[in-house]
Length: 246
View 1 (spheres, rainbow, N blue to C red):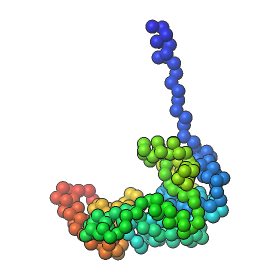
View 2: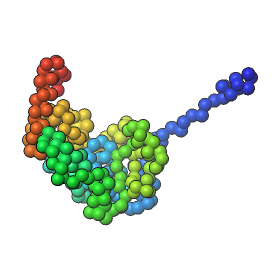
View 3: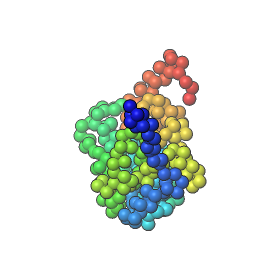
View 4: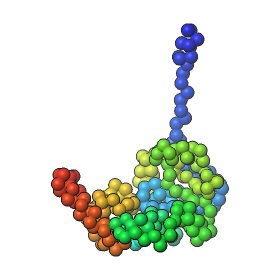
């Protein structure tokens, strides 16, 4: 009985705290010792602008690519050109795997099974062939989700098998925002209205895109001609249900 009490009173082991301050930069420093060349997967969102800036600071040769769901949207192009001018690099524009999926399955348009299915590994392979680089860096963080935490804990900040770097592995959202302010980086402007960078054809997102970027909404409609009907349905539901103002 006494032995059981002693066991229950034993102090619990504390989980190690994630790195803070200067230790946040250890993953990118480690990655730069594997190679002086890196290819950045860039979206224009908060995490990706920090990753690109870090890679420019720690790698001698930096390439970047951007995956679009709809090509040539003005707010995305403005961000891409700003970073191309800032760092003197070219950011490749490549189709997002979701675009092929949407075209094949007929999302807000007629289906087209002649479109080849592509995956992220296909995009990564093409980016590697075009740039000549092998290591790909992106903005994944262990704080993003339980699944991502497990994956990154297993692989570490340098995933040799997949040829991936995770410079922001231990960063928290407040670390990202602080770095953006200190380095005077720009986040894709649509996030001001959408709450995130452009990423889907969800009716609410399309409603806001049409409101703030009508010319871009017309570009989207040329690719997905039925998206206007979904936006109209969203409007009617808001009017009938007394939805929030935008």
